Length: 516
Image (cartoon, rainbow, N blue to C red):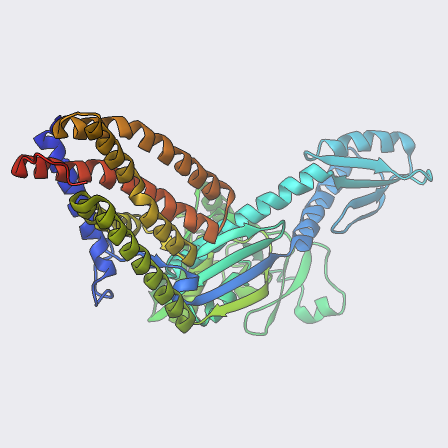
């Protein structure tokens, strides 16, 4: 019989010990004080309770902003080419402009098509010179998909910084985002954070026009009235002098014992900020968040370090929330809560209990069957089955997998499938003995020849798991993950660990009869 080398034996034992070590937190009574790198398996929403939020991305506002930007580009293009135009307007669907001169109109249509990819430029057939500019269907679809992807990424960054354990954030449909928060029974603070777009910009305060004058209509086209966070109003320039998209970091600091938010720009933003503050010393700079002025300090000197501070009547919590929003980035579109669902911890506990009972019943049934069918070899398989479950839980704990109710179903299925490989091996050994081979030769042939069949059968299951993981979402992915991990661990324990046990039995007992 071919013997395993000492090095392979040590590797097998080491893998088993490491798996058991990482699985231990799942059975320890006090899990709260464990180090971060040694934690039990994360439980999903359906097992520990929590909240589920279905958010809708307000695509209409995004398209309205996109068309407003396109309108500015059209206006600038017409001015550059000195073309006369009338009634330049935009809505969420298109930009319209009227050009009376047909020669200028034809040239303008060529200019417009080059403003952005995917633009469709049409002229009204009535001959009045009305031109409509919009995006084609493919461009709009790509734009919406990009917005969903950005929203999912930013929502995940915001929630992860809150310390929520293993949140699930994924796009759903063409304009929705699903957020699941295990262990969070009251998601109000999360809803507040997700409800803020966090679009930050810097505008100069228009000192030449008072708020009262602006309300009477005495205000230039380049300025607008904007509300402040504490009920006051400001007249600020419409165009931002620095955009918040150039922010790279934001942290809470303290000045004179009060919390403030310090921010830092990237190289481009730092250069713009330095130019603006150098050119407007003595004027006020309004810091705008979601169309609301949160602070309007005086520019006392040029700020050339690429960083600054936002002051205001902040509490430590509000300052931390603002810093979190700025760090995670601005949402490309506002989010609205369409559906909120809460799963109680009691219901989760019932699910865990049912899953554990089902696992134990399945395990005991397999154990009894293997002992009755294969005697001593069946008992060895039962030991490897326990190791398989321990290693599987250890891997899930190590990589931070979230265990859901379908995941428990995957574990139960793995318990039944884990002994398939050993049944193939033992039946092949029995056949070889019946053909007249010695026990040693029969065991060697059983392990070596059945190995090919075991690999082929498990590969097909792994392919199915990969397909489920790639195309599925939420619970389906949870099932695919546990199934895949279970197949890999069962291949290890069924072939290598059971072989090691059989070899140890052969070396010690030197049997003359096969216990099958």
